[in-house]
Amino acid sequence: MPTMQLLTLKEIRQAVPQGPLEARVHVQLETVAAKFTREQKPYCELTLADAADRMTLRVWSDSPNFKACDSMQSGDFVEITGEFYQHQQYGLDVRQWKSRPLTAEEQAHLLQGPPGLRAKQAADWEFIGATTAAIRDPRLYALCAAFIADYGARFRNTAGARTYHHARRGGLVEHTAQMMRVAAQIAPLYPDLNLDLLVAGILFHDAGKLWENHLPETGFSMPFDERGEMVGHIGIGMELVNSLWRKIQTDERAAEWQKLSPPMEDCRLHLLHLIASHHGEPQFGSPVYPKTPEALALNYIDNLDARLEMIFAGYSVAKPLAARIFERVRPLPGNLVTPLAKFSEDAL
View 1 (cartoon, one colour):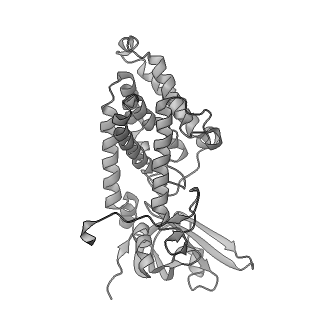
View 2: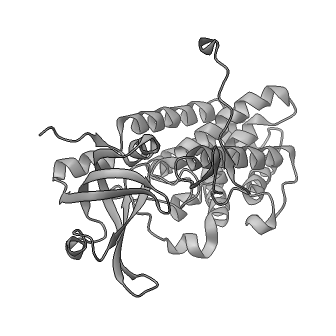
View 3: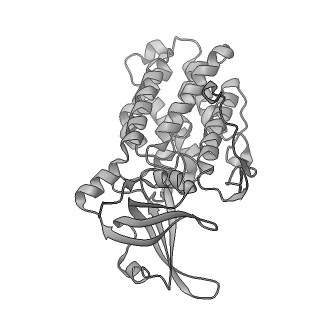
């Protein structure tokens, strides 16, 4: 009997709208929880995670797999083999499934992530390095270079968010690189923008997430961090900039930098403002509103990339409500509608 195809959760999720799919998937059990229905019948809820996606698998008490849950623990690495399909109520689901532990080699391969994602994140990281290396202001350049040198490895293991967007290891790299691409495109249209400051602001705006949303190399489950909980990524980011700023002031070139315009202290203050205001409004977590052109641009670029990531990903997880209409995916404001296909002369 031929072996079923090994796919990622994302590949399976993209395929099942066309019909049920027999496949294998390698995942980590992020959580294994014993729960009860409203009728107080026991069931087991498994959260499966790989490098780019998650799914919830509910194992009911009358399922042949229910007893198998007793031997499963959070953090285990397993292969799930079965028929994946789109459940009307729960979304992506699998039936008639079997599981087995992954070998050490399979586990190591899973932790690396799929080749396409690895290649994309590597290219994004190179783009971040090249873009910050092109900063003309030597103070901002030195600050960005010090950050990448000291925290680059941690940056590459950080998610863009805990749940809503780029919620995967390396997601912050993807989000930051895409924001820099957008900034590079709009800067010629708004020549009064200080692109050096904007690029530095993009690099540092979520730098506090290196603690708030950092993932270990040994799994896909994001732990909670006390510093992230008590201070938040905006406060941590501002503290980080101040710490690195003190570091670059010991550079042998610092005396010359003090003679440059704009003043060095103004550079620091404006960069701190970009971090503080990038959520746009106090109700969204920023202590101040954006009050400079670069701060406004950063806020909108951040929202644009985050929301487009959420809506593109939303179509594969949202419950269909009618033809071409899908249930709302939080925090987006309303139901999703299938986008208009791009014009193609091949269709003529």
